[in-house]
Length: 86
Figure 1: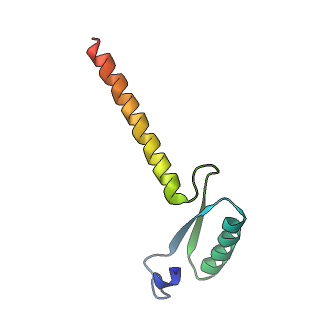
Figure 2 (figure 1 turned 90 degrees about the vertical axis):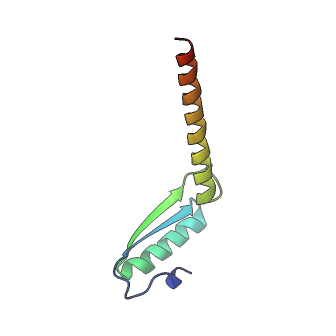
């Protein structure tokens, strides 16, 4: 599927990033694509979704976003509570 979005004459983007689940299939795919696209002159970045943080990168990002929202809500509530007691 990736070759559909890149071409040999595409010189403006020579960097590709992959995000895999940290398991055997992810490690195998990482090695395969690192070799394939490095030979073609691309800088290849490989990232892994941390263990127990979701089944894929989207789920991981959703969890991180929800966590940040919760922290922000807690900080706002704490600030407003302190402000009211002054």
